[in-house]
Length: 249
Image 1 (cartoon, helix red, strand yellow):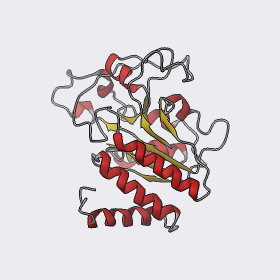
Image 2 (cartoon, rainbow, N blue to C red):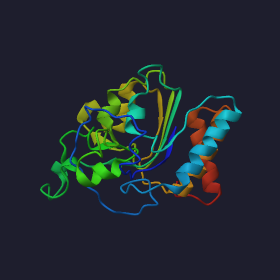
Image 3 (tube, rainbow, N blue to C red):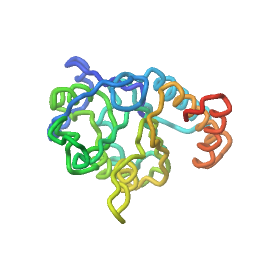
Image 4 (cartoon, rainbow, N blue to C red):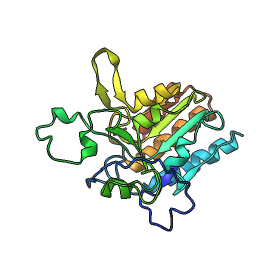
């Protein structure tokens, strides 16, 4: 599990994080919007910590071993190590910001905006935000000799997640992508499927931080203790959220 991620990072925080000498440098930019939404701004998600801590406790209570990456340890390096030395985890949960930028050719003014958003490849214009990403997002280069913290769909598609039964993307607009004729949707969904993951839980909309952690708590309760399928657990959790008056989900 990944959650309570620190998106800002200074030179002192970089020391305990393993580095990748071949990390790519991508020119990125930053745009401020509502930081209570898991979407375009990479501000700390207050309820992400509660969400992942409670899920970890529920898994532990059910005698399901788990590893929780929080703060600076929720790095791109640690994520890319998944599936290399041992089989990928059965469940992979990411509580963070997600993004998808539309095809720049469909925009009125393609000369404006950062180069990252203007990539021709939709698997580069879609991704998830991990530890320390704000530095690269603002300056166009990672802090130190390390990954930039911006995990693109393309990078995910190159991983081995063949042992992963369920991926839960507790983030904004992770189900979005670019439709390319009969080839399907290019984005995070295609990335995780290409990597070998079996079932995905993702969102087509922006999702508020507080309501999301409530939904996830209900989802895992039904998944773990009531032995419901991921599909059933999500539908029933959403139904309970609507009954509580949190119908935005």
